[in-house]
Length: 520
Image 1: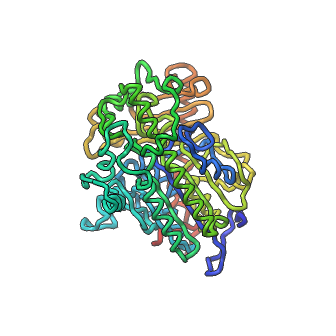
Image 2: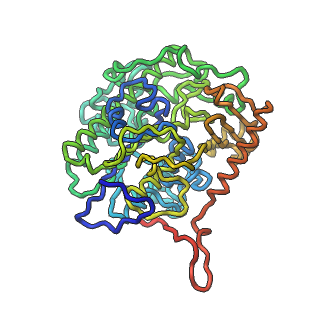
Image 3: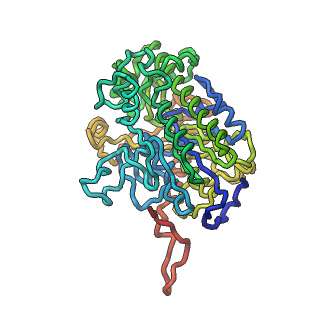
C-alpha cells in the first residue's frame, strides 16, 4: 500500500477497495527503556524482527497513568486536562470521539480482544445499565469479541474446562496466580496462560473473518501484575544484578509524594503470596519480581509472533498496518517504588513501533513523541475524517522518512493521585481531591514537576539522568522552574477545548473549522 498524503481525505470505502487492515496491540505496564532494541530483560525476537520492517519511536511517552487515564489519551488523542479521565473509573465524556468511532464511517468495524478500562459517561446511562459504575467497560466504537478484564471469566472458564483446579472464582485472575507460592512458577502451563488464551481468540477470529478490512485492538494485560510467570518463560530470562540497575537508591529525604507511596505501597498488590512495604523489599525479592516481569515480556513477544505468523499464513500481512505500544510504564523498584506512580520516566516512557507496508523500514526515531499522537497518525494512514480538537500530532512525516524540522522539543504528562473511594491521599496531605495531582514537563535536559500545593521538583537530566536530585532550590533550579511553568502554561493555552470554539456563527453561516461529533 502507499501512504496517503497528509490532509487528503480518502473517498468513502467501497466493497472492492484495498483499505488496509489494522492490528493495534497494547501491552500493559511495559517500560520504554526495556522496549525491543533497547535494554531487555527477556528475549523479544518477534518484536525485534518487527523493528527491522517498521519505525521504532525510542522517546515515546504516555500523557497520564494509571491504565484508565493512559488509555483515554491513547484512544481520544487528547491531553488529560481535556478528557479528564484522571483515575481508573473516571468517566469518559461522551462528547469526545474515540479512535474506534472515527474508524467506523470509513467502513471499519473495530473489535476488541482484551480490555480498554473505560467507564462510560453516566449521563448517558440509567443506574440499571450494566455499564453503570463499571470501570472496566468498553471504549465507544469497539465491539468486544473477547472481553478479558480483572475477573478473567473467559480465561478461567477455559482453565476449568481443561481440568485446572481454580478454586477462588471471585478473585478473578489474581486468584489464579495465588495458587502458587511467591517466587514459584505459576500453576498454569505456558500453553494455557492468560496471554496464550487471548492470542488463541485472535487467531480464531482471523481464520473465520471473511470481512475485510479488519480493525483489531489486541490489548494484552501482561506484563502487568501479578508478577508471576510459567517455568518455560522464567527459563528464558536473565535479569541484571541488583547493583547494576541504575535507580535502586531512594534518596535521603524523599519528596512528600514519594514518602506517601513508601508508606502505603505493599508488595501484596504486585505479586502473589507476599506482603510488606515495597521500599524495604530485600534484594532477593526485587530480583524475583524483576525475573517474573522479564518473563512476562518474553511471553507476550512469543504470542505476538504467533499473530504475525498467522497473518502471513492468511496472506494478510502485506496489507496490515501494525501498531505496538503500551499504556504506561512500571517503576520496578526504581526510587523504592512499584507500579505507575510519581513523575519518573519509568512510569511514563512506553514502547511504540509502527509498521506500515510500503513505508521506510528499520527506522529508529529519537524525537519526543506522545501517546496522543497515535490517533492523528491513524487518521492520516486510514483516510479518516480530521478532528480539530485532537491534541496529538501525526507521525506520518517520520514514517515517510522525513522528520519535520519544527517538531516538539518536550513532552507532557500528568498524574492524579486522588482517591475518591477511600480519601487516602486527601487525608494524608490534608488536601481536597482536585489538588492531589502533579504535571510534568520533560525536555532533553531537564524535568519540571508542578504541584498545586506540594513542593516542586526539578531534575537536571544532563547530570542526573536517574532523577535522584531535586534542584528546585538552587539558582539553576529557579531558572528551569520558570521555563517549565511557561512551557506548561503555553501547552494548556494552545490545547484548549475546541469542540465548539472552532466555529462562529454570523449572518446565517458557520465560519471556522467543522467539527466531528461521536457517532455510534
